[in-house]
Length: 232
Image (cartoon, rainbow, N blue to C red; front, side, top):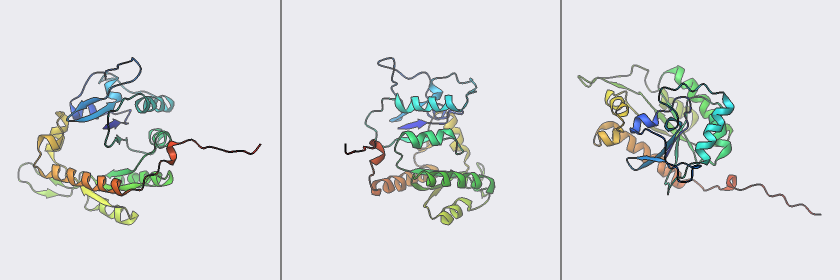
């Protein structure tokens, strides 16, 4: 499943071609909307597409808590939470509310993006959320006419950051016009172009992450309340 936690700029509805409010069997909880076998929930289903989200921190926190608390997920294998950039209220609320198995840092190669990515990595380490690895997005521009590759945002910045921080480099995704076109049309790249190079990269990243999660020691301590025994 996917939980779109980017409250100010939800993009999952557009990328999956899903619109309209989710169903509710009891008028309180929400049934995730499903596309391509993936359950999803997003604030984008609950507000008009053109509505500006002029919300202060407490309202954003409450909205995220509602998505976390009131969604009736069905037999999930994984729940992927798409976070906005930064280290603000949404990220902190998330790690305080639910046990998070791991995080993935996504960055582009240029220095200005790597600075923000480093802050995000430091935040997850500080709150004891394992960093499963790093993905470099827009790694290489591929010309749609001739196929020429050019590192317009710099070369290898994500890989260097991963090596410096001793985390796994999970993969590098190209700046490819087809990825953008597929996302805008509501068809994920892995569905629209199952044999394409970007799809193979996505699948390899998914294999690496699932393998790391499978090998991860289970820690359920955060799911239980602290119990204090006092002698009277």
